[in-house]
Length: 292
Image (cartoon, rainbow, N blue to C red; front, side, top):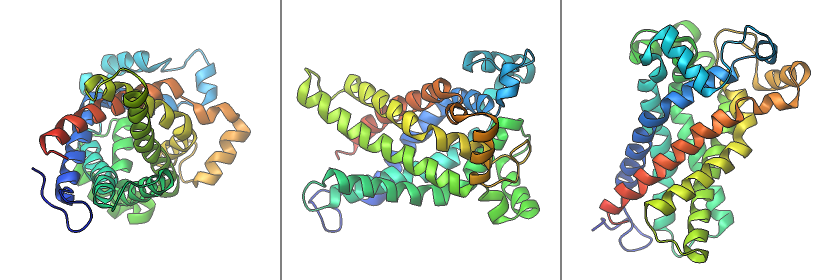
């Protein structure tokens, strides 16, 4: 039986419970799907000129993963796993754990608009805490960095500073994660309700899988431009290093065209879709153990 929350509905779970369930679910999903995320990052960082040349390094997610295994070893696919787990523990623990706690503690059901505002707010709070881990994760993935994550946090903070280093690309990252995360949460809830109310489906892993896939596609469509900008803004090296998100967007539009904002769309969907499927299936299963 879940513990009674302070105020709101009787039986509302405690914040540490919703935080723990959300953080554990996202961490498990991160471990399963990180190779696709690493391939997506490598593909996004290729310029259109590189993509059009015969010397292009990566021609798709599977080719990227094969190339990385051949040139850098299998462990390169899980580059950034430690900061990735730090990120999911903080980001999803806050964005989904706080969202669930607030929603279930409310008096009565929240309207769609209220749930959207709540999802955006908790997602923004989550990325404020997790941005340093996001920066390190992308750098490990893009540049195959060596060394411990904790030592890299200290190195980046001491050599680049807190805001120019660990919070590099924060504006683009805040927009990206607020959009993608809120879309994931609301799309998952909406599609799950639709499937249960209008189709002969039961509240089991098959429905959770279908709703997770729907949430992943919706999040990819809405979030890809901000995702590409955020990935480029967090880089230390390369043609976009040192530029703001606005400067990067203008340069991309001028040099690479509108479609560059959807670079790596299908690899991105494979990552976000697979992550959402895994996370929501884990979340529903672990959540059921705590009866909330």
